[in-house]
Figure 1 (cartoon, rainbow, N blue to C red):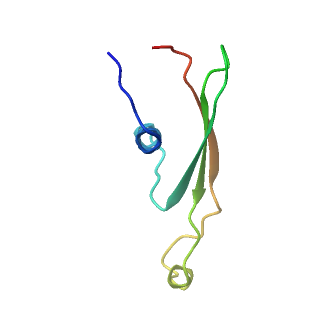
Figure 2: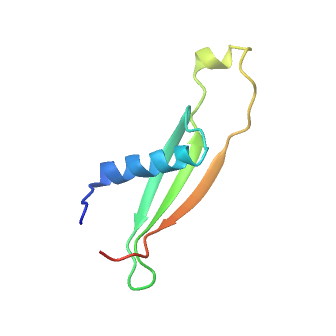
Figure 3: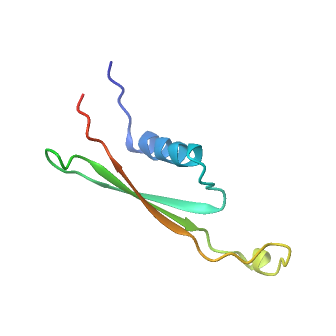
Length: 82
């Protein structure tokens, strides 16, 4: 069986996977950078998760906790061939 995914579908699958591992993505921006490798260094994706900027309305809302900016880099490596 072969499943073909375009870049948008891959990005969504990565987001779904991250959320399924327990990392909440609400209020965060996800950036995915793909790198093509050869042989054992096959394709890789670098995922950056950062808190979205606070709007002026949110900045005046004192009911929200003051959290530091969060960032995480995850590496996804596809070592399997079709």
